View 1 (tube, rainbow, N blue to C red):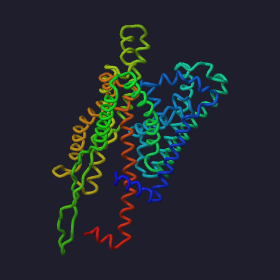
View 2: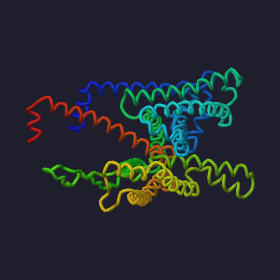
View 3: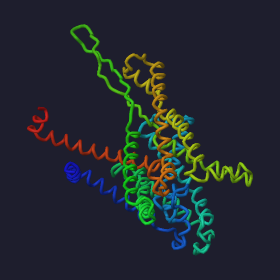
View 4: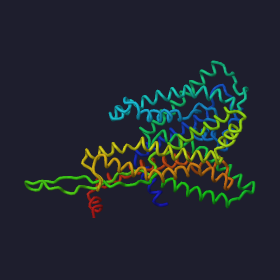
Length: 450
């Protein structure tokens, strides 16, 4: 505890870091306030049915959690930052097949700026499609027509679509400001703060369920909290775990008139156990909408009824079996396109590096690809297990569905990954300050050397 307090004091002493954290917190507060502002022309009092549809998990609950409740509030940030995430994924996947994007990726900073601009325009296009779909879908989600004060005429639709698109673009701008002027990855922080915003209510519902309904009492709450800590620790291990591949860099030293080969320094290539992050879960969740939709198209047939019954419940057995299989498949797919073993091998060869015992070139590429295949398998199983764990705790111990979503899946991995990334950036500032302090005093440098 004493070390933690000292760390907070050190953070406060560093003016730049203090200003960055202050700016970040201010922007996050603005984003949270925007999530509570209801679209003009909608009566917020009559949105109770929409809120009830998004409570307690389900696909709508996941969407609402990612927007920090803005989806259920019909707010100006109802679409959240997800259109930008979707655009980023599309651009990243298109970069595999489109030579123009591949060329931009190799142009350094200028190419990155162009790709970012393409992503922004694609975000606007996705918003223009999603905004009217969301507005027309409000009635289907239980919002009565009387909630639309001025009706659903052209004036309401045009103004609401413009506000929703602007809200997403403004949220994207806030995220980029955090990345440039604040601390941490801005877009990821906006998603994380939206997820965390639903945590207190979910825990309160679980607490009331356990205590007031005599469903395990405080002892069950304690067991759940211990289990939650264990799951978080396992998630941290999944995010941080790497396989280090030793790399030798040859160097030559001049000794008199003859060049003598000297043993070079040894470094490591860190291959992550989960190189794909949360993307396999996001892809799998996107596809899991399909079975229930196809079942609905089949009508009252036996297969259609079975598909609707088993794939509409995200905590059901068949849903999670297919969900886990898709995650394993997408983990291999996304790892294959994001970890370029051929490029890594070529870069090593050009820089004079080699893996001990492995010939440079194609043999090194095959070796790295083989290692990635071996470590991706346990990583994909771990990721799939973590993704379906909320369904396990719901079925085994009767946990509330909203609270169970924090025991695995995309929500937990995003929270853990963003927290680790932000802490690492804060630590880098602290380390730089520490080294600067040592350099200012000769006595301190002497003591450090001793």
